[in-house]
Amino acid sequence: MSLTTELPADAARGPIPDTAEPYALFEEWMAEAVAREPNDPNAVCLATSTADGWPSARMVLLKGRDEQGFVFYTNEQSRKGDELLSNPRAALCFHWKSTRRQVRVEGTVERVTAAESDAYFASRSRGSRIAAAASDQSRPLATRADYAARVAALEAANPGETVPRPPHWGGFRVLPARIEFWQDMPFRMHDRLVFERLGEGWSTGRLFP
Image (cartoon, rainbow, N blue to C red; front, side, top):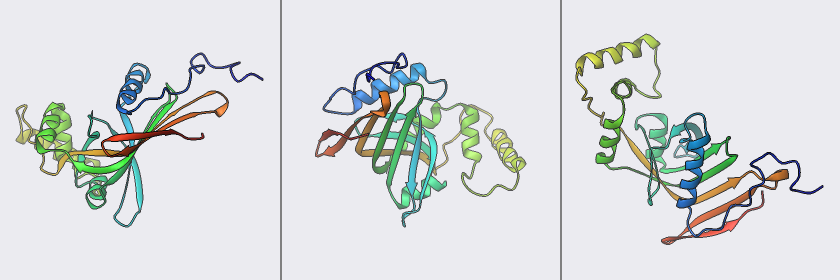
């Protein structure tokens, strides 16, 4: 049987093109996901671990990407915040079912600047800022009503549009040491292109599926 017969309409695409750096390719794939994913194309699974290596993973939203790395925001007193501060290494996994692609990122982690955190916090809706400030994220909650009461109290204390950013709420940037692009291909002959940090540039190669 030919390896090009009986394929879904968009599965006949060729392998991932060779390129010297990963970021332009990531932006291209993200743009296609934005056009095709029904919800949150910037959703990404974030994996962290404790100082002694106990892992955990959860979904977060990517809120920025530049030549340094990939940025997300959270309560630094949450479980992921505690783990990132005690063991500043993380992995990200983007999976877009609509495009049948995946990107994996591994690297060290740093805090973004206070100015970056202030700017992003201010860009959120007032309700989202109130909810974030009212939450002791990942800590035990006796009843949902207790959280609602905290939200109501903060709304009353901050009647205007300005809601101060809590000092323990901010951003983290994953500084990639490795980025892998995975693309679905016919008959499970998937294509994998990997980039590994090499000084100021990248080494590249392909992996068996």
